[in-house]
Length: 316
Image 1 (tube, rainbow, N blue to C red):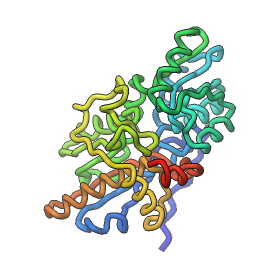
Image 2: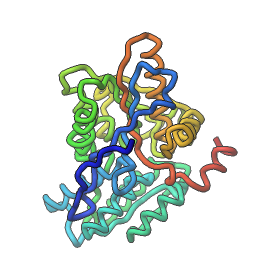
Image 3: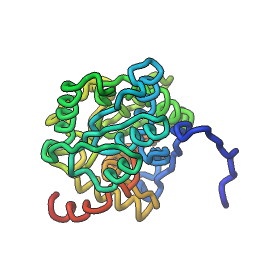
Image 4: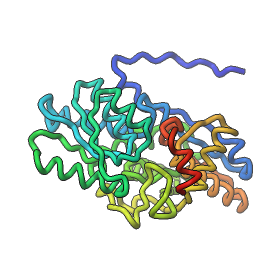
């Protein structure tokens, strides 16, 4: 039976389409834990196709409001891709010039999408990953500070606040007191920090779990292996309850499983997050505790098309 239609939405700008992303229950992928509800929050439903729309829009909007960003300045930041797409989208929508520093080995899709919005890309050393992009953007800004507005997504408090006021509040509205566990990946750490802060204020305990790659050299684009990385200033390990480390193969395989069994085509960081969520659910089921686990799906799988399949077979 088709779902009952809600009132259609009408917006004055694309920026108003950010947020209110759906939850979808994962029945087949989580079949080994039938007593536990496992939900995926589909952040690819944002207009820029990822969870990063939330933080990018808030960082740009707040800077425009208080004068840190003006028509004579260029917004520049480092990104592994999704935040860059979001900056580019809202830059085009709000008339802001955008330059991005990203490792040259990010997926072709992300490069093409950002350029489509008129963004200029400056490439950093692929072997240095996201940390190399951070160092390069800081060098560029230090050399010409008057030219740029540098939001610095890794230290900007509006990054986690976007999730405190948005993602966390939405999850509570969607599942209410049923939620027992929340799972999100570690990148800039804005999603886990802001959402966890909001969920921890709820009237009942909710366990918040961060997911990071198991190894420093990994194939989970967008996630940071914190022990071997620059720690984002907005990160605070006391802001969540537990860290789960997931291997590249587990993340890739779960992405394939979600596409085949749930018709949800996601990126590999999402696969890692869902893998962790299902492992939690299986443990709860085995211990006959029941529960409700909500996992963040940060983006779509089309961001990871060629040449990543070759890389899976031969590099990882």
